[in-house]
Length: 142
Image 1 (cartoon, one colour):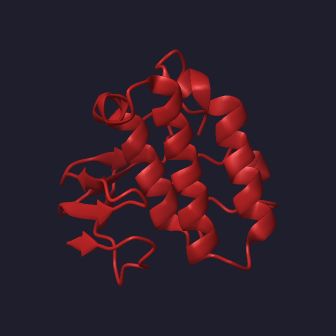
Image 2: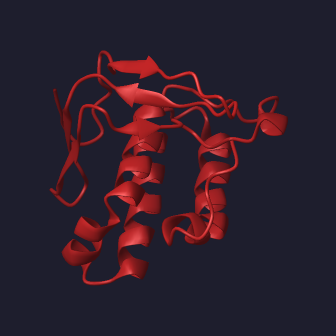
Image 3: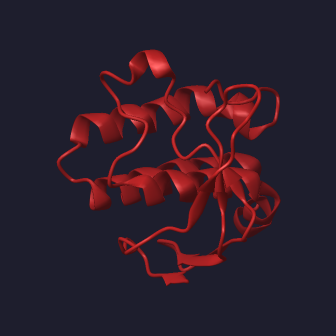
């Protein structure tokens, strides 16, 4: 499957994976290629696992864990997971993480334009708290 920049896919082939720790995990059942804002071709392989959107359950009344901008959060997860390629692409980890966070925000705004508050809060959250997850010091609290 190929997805162009800011294109809303008709479907995303995922399988829910039950987890004994109670975490929300989905696995891709097909390969996806996504063109990003800078022309970079992001490969999301079959078998890649994601939590889709790292929203703690106590916030679900305000910020839902899923919405139309699901692709934005998948791209963000893959960029964080594939950070070595991104670091080489950008020449440093700060720039690659900043790109991943801004790319998520670009896609979220385009795919869910009416969710402006939710999109912005999600962006601020990854900017403020994503550093330790990006560097691998902590896992995402889901």
